Length: 100
Image 1: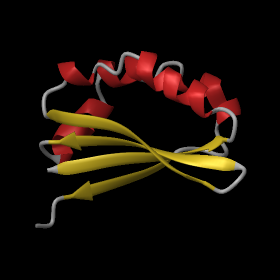
Image 2 (image 1 turned 90 degrees about the horizontal axis):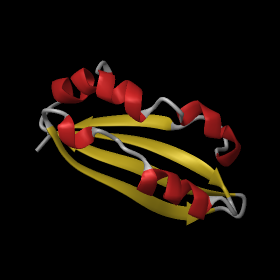
Image 3 (image 1 turned 45 degrees about the vertical axis):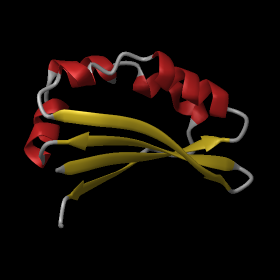
């Protein structure tokens, strides 16, 4: 199993818009071999930003990597760069392979 996470720092006041973007987007994940689950997680606020994490679960790291090179990935991310006003910096990626 492999878990891929991206952390986002969203400027306070933009949380509802950020969540709506994720709610309304077509991720194409259900069409990809090896995809298991997706969650958008909301964390704490420091007064200036609120932390979110996109969390996907895959059968393996190789399944995730194949998705990142696919047309489905390109389509799911084609407008991502046009929404920078919501973010404080760039998303931070973290990948985890199952150890136990």
